[in-house]
Length: 322
Ligand SMILES: [Zn+2]
Image 1 (tube, rainbow, N blue to C red):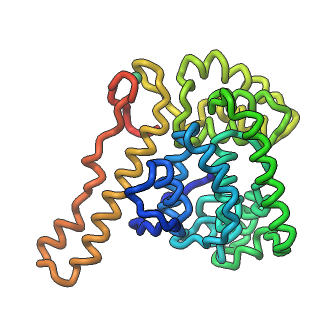
Image 2 (tube, protein in one colour):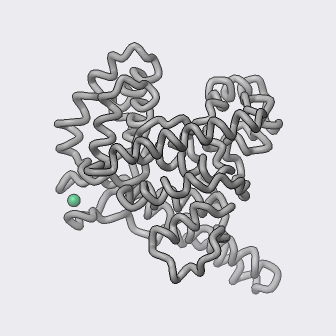
């Protein structure tokens, strides 16, 4: 789960880590290739793709757990994660050391399944970051505001233990597992971490979950959220109350009730790519283009031509993003 995500606006340069040529691989292998790259935008887009195709993604990610390789991310901008060198006072938070491919796989697995295998670093405390910002501590090394684990032997053991837990879980659960059932199981579990994953995704998730629509939300999800609003865990009860108050980005088709969050994400991606393309055109031509053409390029707003999404079930055009 990514909190407070500030989307990067730079063009993605895809650097695939695997040796197999891209076109001879299956679609899921291509996504795993992009997910294993060092470019953050590419990785995050692949994460959304994986999360939205859970039945293919989970076994592929379980395999990726076996690659305990260090692939430091580039172009992360203000992203706050254990591999970041600097804290800029703002940015999306990923409390997983996703420079390690096995942890990156675990990050996606926990996001898809709402299980807690122990990949989370527990290094980044949002209230501590906020306190640092309020005290004016920006643009400083991340390790001054986060409790980064430096013992590499211990980190290796924690990664390996978490991977073992994930593999054992998949051996026991692979038959008949669905993401929607996983969501309900997490809400009904006694584990505040899993409950937080599930509620956080219901509030901000940008991916697809077959089986979730307005009716199943009302009948099967909402009663669980109402129970969790009374939880003794303060974080869980606060999040549950905010979800019940409608403070969520998730929205459903006004005609048939289908969950539209993933459709909005894809439109947002298209807009981001259109923006990046225009910015690249400006960069490349600013010294050679006639002033009136350059002005035209500066004033163009190509992302505005990209329409809001249509419902994948009934075709109804959705409203502007929630
Ligand atoms: Zn619809």
